[in-house]
Length: 506
Ligand code: NAP
Picture 1 (cartoon, rainbow, N blue to C red):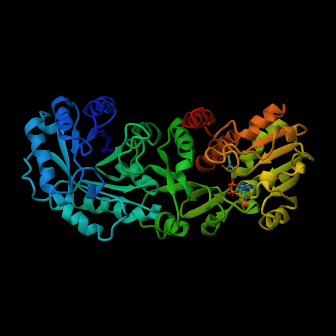
Picture 2 (cartoon, helix red, strand yellow):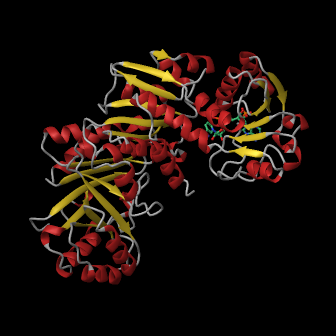
């Protein structure tokens, strides 16, 4: 448990809409921020006349130079604040302000209010953060610095201002914006940040990288975290698609553990490991205990590990890291996660003929697991030169297949596995590696894609009367194995499955 606050930030150009959102936000938030810079004066006055808070309400009138919609001229902005002081009847202790660094002398602020001095940079983490901090600190108000992080470790200098503020007994709100900065929003309160911001709902963000209030409270449990909290995360080139934070946080919660799982959007893996993870070199003390590793880092992570278990070494990819003392240990749970549902649905795989389409990281784990079970595997790939390495490594047959011009041999098998992204939500959703006509002699189709669950391939299989499994079971099975590696106890699979299904609206 920590003392930080969750501020739900709401913005609208309509007073009625804003007041309605206020009514929904106030019961959930510690503080509600009203962003009034998108509103005309008459609407603003309507808000002032009708807002009746029972908790602190933070008024913000952000100029365009700081990412808002108000004019930059401080004198014009002073007009807004004068109207607030004269027309708004909110009690003094519930009326908070956010005013920007450049707004120094345009108005004499009345005493006795809680106010924030803020600085925003949407272009990146600025050089000279300590000078910016000095400028903000000179007002003797709460210091807020929000800047865009283009990589996970770019946020480090901003994060480290928490320590400076603590040593100077100042309150600070450091926020790294964007997907790569989400960890600062989630972990900030545990480390002493004064407040973290969240929108009422996903889609209503007032700054990049915000996480909905419901997820901050129920999924990441940000107010329950402290410096002892053990931190895990998904290391991904694009973390925004990962459902692992929902799955693993549900597991930690069900198991009653002081652990949290955060999205870590990593571009430069070497920097991340050396500056944020390796006990000997890290510049931040976040208490990382493990990671789920996904594209494109599953192979690159291996050079940073002190130990790699036998399965992961044979597969040549690591999707799970456990930090034990000073050691980073690598595992692969994709293979067991893939094979468990298959054996459940198909039974013994010895001598079963299996076509695997796609020759990426997932195919690698599937082929390894299938060979272990004694299956006869044929690999289909569009780039034969690239796939040759994989085929030779595992001793499987290789056939060239341009997916949009499928060869009939692809379905001359007992089991057809799709290990390509064809069928995934988005622009590839209407693609399938095979048609119902081609599938009629196949015994089982296994599509690794889990979003959507009902891919075109699965629908084609059903149309052909063929059993089909989607990727959801694998996702949960590999996640459960990860939990077991980190926790040393069996995973609360039911809670994990429920959380994933809820996240995917299933
Ligand atoms: P990856 O490393 O990027 O490999 C994708 C493979 O698909 C590559 O061989 C690629 O060929 C091939 N491919 C892509 N587009 C193609 C097309 N239009 N026609 C033919 N081949 C195409 O990805 P991955 O990690 O192996 O993942 C593959 C899929 O499995 C993804 O959809 C992923 O979400 C899913 N997956 C699911 C789980 C789960 O738990 N359910 C776990 C892991 C992966 P090139 O090399 O020529 O580009």
